[in-house]
Image 1 (tube, rainbow, N blue to C red):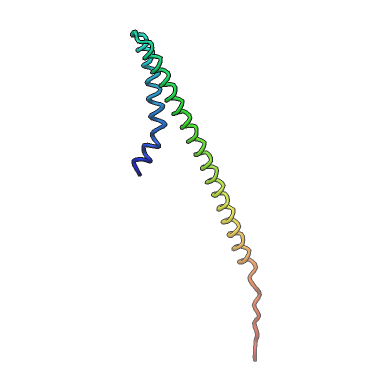
Image 2 (cartoon, one colour):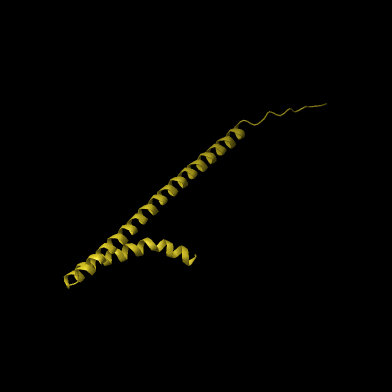
Length: 104
């Protein structure tokens, strides 16, 4: 797997984690006396958390679409297999009549 693909897949989770951590730390920093840094950290944390959540939702929707397509393909293949099996049974039950000539 490419490192780039791995990092792209981890980006939403990292953004969500960093955002939540920033939201948790922001009140502590604000309480220690620097309210402006606490507010900026809180705003950044919210933005990162929202980005992670939105990316996760988009990924979930894509997975749902893919699963639906796979399900449709599977049902099509099963229906084709059943039809072929039925056709094979019918051809075995009704063999073609053969003409046999008996000569003396």
